[in-house]
Image 1: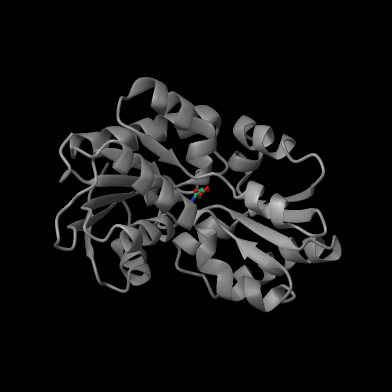
Image 2: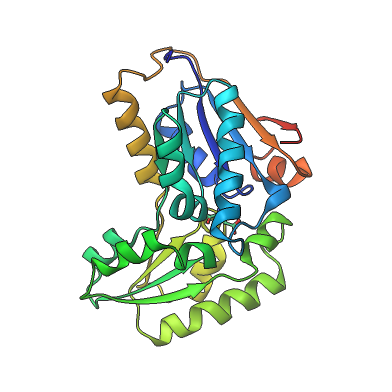
Length: 259
Ligand code: DGL
């Protein structure tokens, strides 16, 4: 593995760019390749087997581009497929899981809410994590429809606002003091979510932790890029590149490819 090889990331679409941004901020001189599998979004309602097959396809695409590490920038793919990926490929994988632990540890009321996809909330890995915090009441809510609206660029739409009210109000009534965003698309909804939640409810996601973990694994393996220049950044999408371009404010190279 050469230190100049890129970090590869994939997600079911544009959501994982929230993770990419954290990694790019922390490791600006790393080369990165991001795959937005928007053609197959949302992953959240697919079967475990389908999620595994899509994750394998994305991984192989990134390995063909010589990625030195793969960040599964999708909670649904991590919770359903990372075990299989780790068992089949030698490259290190970094996954993203809902930030239940910091929310449960810091919650004063011992009541937290989690908004995530059906695939994540139904996964074995999520249940194993949640079971470790028996003293904390976890209010689970599937974010039906949210990823599809984000993929259509409808972050501020009326429909989005209606869905968010519908999903968050029961959590407010249940008296949560932490809301865990368990899907890498959802950080793009933080401004809207903040308008709905009372100020004392904290919102937490896993982006920063994933970036720190990526740095620490690369450092352990002496695989950090020591170059002084800003890294080369490429985004691939297999759907209309407009939404990805918009979310990246047209600052980076976006290539349309069928993968
Ligand atoms: N960004 C994915 C996640 O973190 C979205 C899943 C989906 O496509 O439904 O779970």
